Length: 536
Ligand SMILES: Nc1ncnc2c1ncn2[C@@H]1O[C@H](COP(=O)(O)OP(=O)(O)OP(=O)(O)O)[C@@H](O)[C@H]1O
Image (cartoon, rainbow, N blue to C red; front, side, top):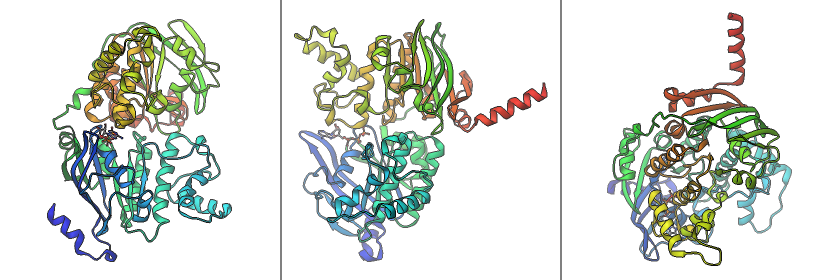
């Protein structure tokens, strides 16, 4: 490591030093808690560095220090392209240095257009702003075309699918780097912007990232997806409990080795596949669901069964659970749960909850967590009546209950008085799961349930999902994380262009079989049934 550090300083700044960014002695306390302890890492010019670590290991804290959102403890050193940069960074300084971010929540303003969002960074740095909208729209179109994105610059961001938003946010960050030509370096930090993107789009994104680093820029890629990290990064730095657990070259490192570095112990991935169980009677009948990109989808789910819904971006798989819950208006369709029929064109979340349906959305902020309240208040919110009347709630019992739930879901920190806003993203997601899984629902709708949840806790969440099914709930899980679907599902339904193109069950379910089925097209099915018809 020491010799690498010297190599970066050998070149004059103008000769494009080999080390784009280096931090040394970086520590950060929040009150008595140490989020980072003497962290040293470096990002080379023209490389993709993976930044990995369990929930709460300190990744976001490190990134927020680079964004000027947190001041580190005194004594930390930051060097960008060979030049020392004073810490803490003043607000907005990262732009001048040449760092651009895509955070977990993307930082887009949904009510504004794509073009307005693209220009927002430039608005912030220029005093007299006169926008030639026509010219800027042309520039935007050229930018999108370069990255293979078909986006209308004048479309409001709220009309984009969640995946389009993620891709747009990344392209916008690249653009910000290109729009600051006198910056010291060009460093793009991708902080889990695309959890579980379907393979097709991950490939596009990776091609884009590769193109950028080939031009001499650098990328820090934060992710919990080890396969993605193994594919896209050149080196990996792993944080554990706020310290650097190790840095290794990606090529030659095995998945097991990376996991061991992250978790501090081996995790048995092969053992994650769900065991085959006896299922209960038919619990759910979904018939003729249409709306958004979904066209006339029907399927049944038995009590105790976990059914996965997946497909590529735009296939409609991610619209299904929202419509089943009434959170997204369906054009038509009926959902019958244990004999009670709901017209999904007029369903509401309130009515669904009354029928025993819960929806756990991928976006934890939309999942009803209140950041300003504690773990206890968040976990007990849906079941407050168990702890007395509104006038006299038993705080002690609520706290004990929350403590047991946080233990079961390995939430860190364990203290149930911790405010949600002081927790890492992955730990917030564990609280969301702990909160909704206790409702004893009859139908559980999951939308990317382990988004942002680290590899160590995933197995626990999978276990909880199976346990709920074991208690008789029907579960529908929309996800593009094929490894997750293979681990928890009894059956996986694959959509293409809003229609079912494949159904895998039992032993036929595997990560690669699901991925392959996602490439089936409705037209392929039509052709094969034509062939079958001709043959018979
Ligand atoms: N504003 C804050 N106040 C108090 N503690 C905080 C604050 N922000 C982070 N922490 C604590 O610092 C530690 C590191 O959190 P951080 O968000 O950096 O983790 P992370 O590696 O990004 O996790 P995740 O993968 O879940 O996003 C955690 O223990 C967290 O509770």
